[in-house]
Length: 127
Image (cartoon, rainbow, N blue to C red; front, side, top):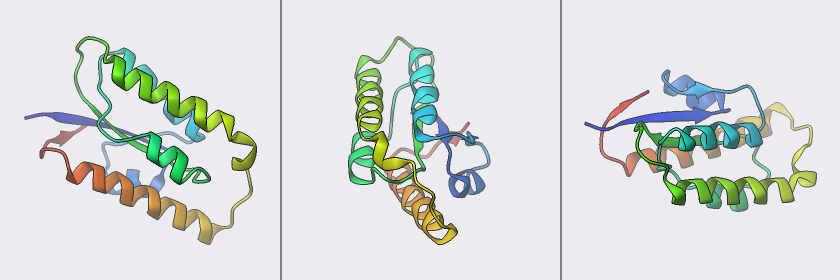
């Protein structure tokens, strides 16, 4: 049975999935942690591009990776690098002070995307 790695900076996702690696960091650092996991052999299982472009102002990002230690997945690496570049390109718009209600909405939107991606994967153990 496959198992997954969850990396997030969203407390709502981490609260629902206790095995998630919660980073108290901006999206760019979440993407860096994802890139490091890919370099160790994990493969990206949730989309990055749609979340970066469609929800570009969302300060939360949750990612699902395979818990494998195989060869470097160049497709996953390319996706992470493209998402990071796009996120940094639009960084001036991102860093704002959001009120608690808006942050809760952003957490909910990220959690919904995460759970949708997870629902499309085979049932497995999360790490």
